[in-house]
Amino acid sequence: MKLKKEMSQVQTQYKDAEQNYGSDLLNLVVAKGYLTKLLANEAVKSYIQRHEPEILEQFELVVNTVSMEEAVQQQVDTTPADVGEASEP
Image (cartoon, rainbow, N blue to C red; front, side, top):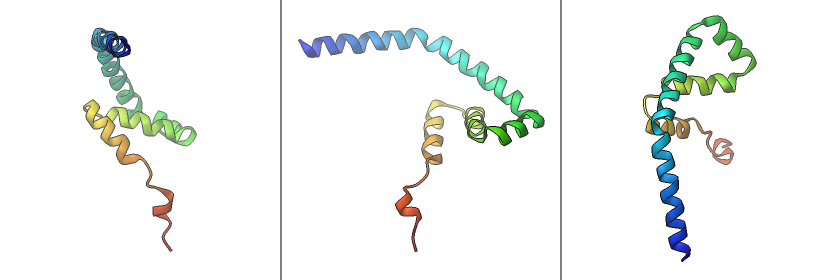
């Protein structure tokens, strides 16, 4: 009975994701275009760099991302290594 309920929930979540995919993708394309233009303005980019460097890093990640798989890989690549490994005498 529990498995049946879980399967039903998964199917509902899948249908919701499937229905929203088109609009989500459109929103991401528009956001990427906007961020590309925004960061092309050196004054804006410099301001964000000075005041919110972490946000600039994420904006650049969005601008430079071609696919979702690439975004995941870039996020993994930018994650710092374990502190224990970095501190060798």
